[in-house]
Length: 163
Length: 393
Picture 1 (cartoon, rainbow over the protein chains, first blue to last red):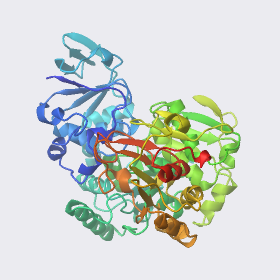
Picture 2 (cartoon, helix red, strand yellow; picture 1 turned 90 degrees about the vertical axis):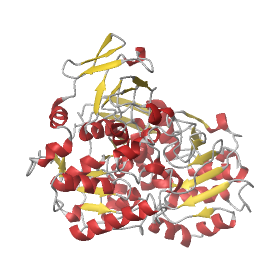
Picture 3 (tube, each protein chain N blue to C red; picture 1 turned 90 degrees about the horizontal axis):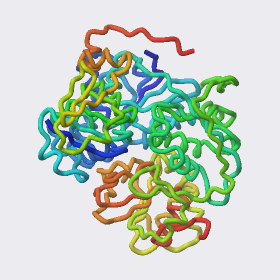
Picture 4 (cartoon, rainbow over the protein chains, first blue to last red; picture 1 turned 180 degrees about the horizontal axis):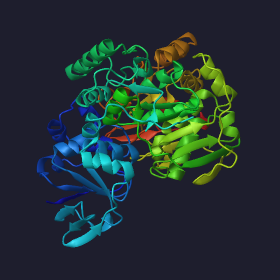
């Protein structure tokens, strides 16, 4: 498993351009992941590879096609210094694990990587990088395998008072 | 979990939300009257898959008893606002990142993904993290041909693309109070470009005039507590603000127009949920003045944000002026900002756009360049074929 290293402010238009948004099948979306900005990704990505970014990963459009395209490519984990809000939620909801790590600057493209979610770290070229756990309620969704699985067994939800 | 007052779905992200709703075992939506459906990204259908999406959504609306504005009314955020579907104190979600626009109506409004929306369609509620707030105090009065878009671009440049991630931006101060609703919508719309979850203008007389004209609702007081705690308070003065331009390929890459004046442009787009209102078109037309034609070699695309705004501009003679000067005026939709429907750029081409994003590939080729500006700067640039300071025209 290798690292696909990206910089800061990777937007969802880059992950999957607007002209492919009539596609909903993850495997089909994956064929166009990073098209135009990093063409070799869709050709060479392998099941289990890890995408590593800098700050503000997934900014821009709310398109859920972005995490779906990565999942379709076999990417199950994205590690970044920080994530844009909507992408972070979309990733958790669809079963793509977004992990926050302060140490992604030292990670290089093509590095060998293994992820240990339970242990709370990733190993990159033999060097251990701590990652922050998924917070609070979102952990329940991650553990359920995404929001669809979480919601399937719910008949109703209890809401807070917003007055 | 918080209850949702209204939920908006459109032709691009809606079909996936409906599929998720089904996968979650959804049979009936929580309340058809609280769901707003319309098509704006790929209209009229630009491909067979887009047409199939429209059919799929129409059938779902019919089955569930949801009122579908279909492709008739315009760009989602403008339509939600002008139909009075967002009001002070409400929680509104939409499967589009610029849903934060409705903060101009004093609503807590935020963009969500399709899976979140599937959950909302089923349960009428969603999990939220309560955001911290940044208070943005804007004082002073705008100079000639400088306005809301220049302010929000300068804020994006100052706060940065992730400077407000997961937070709410609360806009206040004299410049905000004196700003019309169109300008407030422009500001709230681009809160997401700083990573914000919401961008809110505290409701005042202007807000209530706008909302009560569209909906049977009694005004009430709604403002931040005097002792509210803010993550940060930021102070700005717009008195000496120059027209601003976001240069490729990030929205927070913002400079004074004078720094990029002279940059040749191939296409100018005046429209979008950010700047497609009557006031924006009037601002562009005022700069156009009595000039005969836009510059040779520049494609000028004008798209009113809604049918209502289109009619206002038509009746005021603005559309005639744009067409006379050589613009392509299209029916209300997202246009080139969708990056797929039409108005795409070839490699090496340059666009100046009044929309909200200049990401690489946003309007076509990843080797094209997109600059963002106000309608006044866009019109001035269309006249000269290069980025032009509107104060000099």
